[in-house]
Length: 355
Image (cartoon, rainbow, N blue to C red; front, side, top):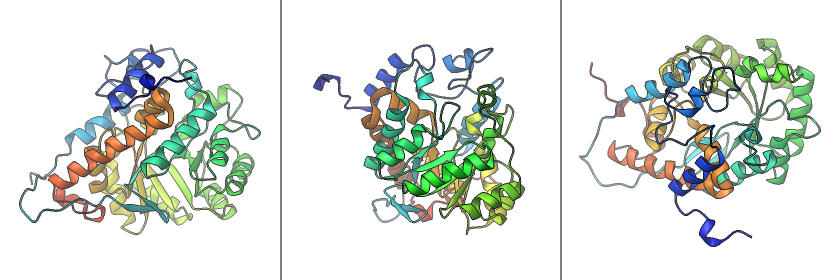
C-alpha cells in the first residue's frame, strides 16, 4: 500500500524519484542537453543508447543549442490580459499545444516500470493535464502484444500511436488495431529506419518512399502523421502523399549524429509548406519558454520526450500530469511577458531579431 508521504506533490519530488529509479542511466539534471558531463552521454560508447544521443551527441546538443540561441522580445506595455493557451490538434481540443511524444522501451531502464503501465501512465497523465499523448513502438512490441496499443485500448482510444517503419503488411495490421481501438490518428516514425536495435532483434525497419506513404495514407481512415522530417523538400513530398501532420524531428538526436537542431530547420519547413499544413516539433524542449519559441518558429504543437519518460518513471500518471502542468505554467508566463494573448499570436514577431 502506498503511503501518503510517498505521493509526490511537486515536480522536483518526481524528478528525485526518477533519479533513484534511473540510477546509472539518467540523473534527471536540471539541464538535459547531451553534454559529456551527463550520465546518458558518458555511457554512450559501446552500450545501448539509453537516453543519450547518437555518436558524439552532436544532434542531441544541437537541439538544445538551437533553442538557446532564440531570444524573445520582452513586451510590457499594453492592456492587462490573461493568456489563452487553448488550441486544437486534428480536431481535438487541447488546454495547451503540448503533447507527450512517442517514446517506448521504458522497461529497459532498470526495469523501473512495466511497459504497458508506462504507456498508460503517459496517456492518462496527458489527458488529466488537458492534452493528448502519442505512444511509440520498439523491438519487443508485437502484433499480439503491443504495449502502446494495449494502453490505447485501456484508455478508450484517447491517444495517437506512432509506429516504427516496419514492413507495409505489419504496419497495416497495426493501423487496423489502432482504428479498432478508436485512436485519434496514426503515424510512422520515418526516422526510425535508423533504429539498429530493431534489426538486431529480428524486427527489421525500412526506409519508406513516397509510394509507401501514399499506400498507408489510403489504407487508413485516420489522419496520418509523418514523424522524423528534417528537410523542406521531404516535408512537401509527404504532404503531396496525403499526410495530415508533419512532425519535424531528428529523433531527439538518437539516430544520426551531426544534424542541425530542430529549431533551425523548423522555420524553413514552415516556409516551404505555408500555413495550411499542421506541423509539430520536438527536440530540446524543456519548458514552456521553449514551447513558445517552437510555436513562434512555425509549429502548431510541440512534443515532449525525455522529460515525459522521467516523469512517468518517477511517479506514473501523476508525474506526467505534474510535469505537463509545469510546462503549461511556464508557457503562460512566457506568453504574458511577450504580449502573446493567444496561441495564434505566437509568431516571429515575438522573437528578437537584431537585423
